[in-house]
Amino acid sequence: MLIPALLPLAVHGDGEVQRQLRGTLCKRQDYAALDEAAKSHPGRTYYYRRNPDLAMLIDSCGRELEARNDPQLLLVRAAAHLKRKEHQRSISDLTAFLEHQPGHVGALLSRGMAYDQSGALDRAIQDYTTVLEHSPADTTAAYARA
Image (cartoon, one colour):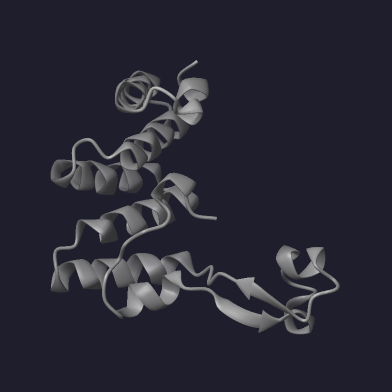
């Protein structure tokens, strides 16, 4: 699962990253032994499956960033890094994104999570506080800051 604060992402075009972010409609019987989503819905013939190859997604984002400067690609790549527990790389991408859009609540929250998971609690608290200044009702930031 990618970070909910970053989804839905508005990655434009029909490039490789866009194709990887889309899920696929699969027959349940083909993945029943492999995927929890297939196991949890035994009565369904088909189910929606996200493409989980994070390494390929990170590489695709890098290639598309070289071709066109779309800050949304930084968010996608940061989410994939965070999912792989590559905290410093995620922080780097989120910081670069925040240079383009300084008040983006989802990016600030995600960077706070990355700081928190990497042990930089002071920086995490700063990001959570900034999220709460922009969005006082954000319970995720409030709980994480506490």
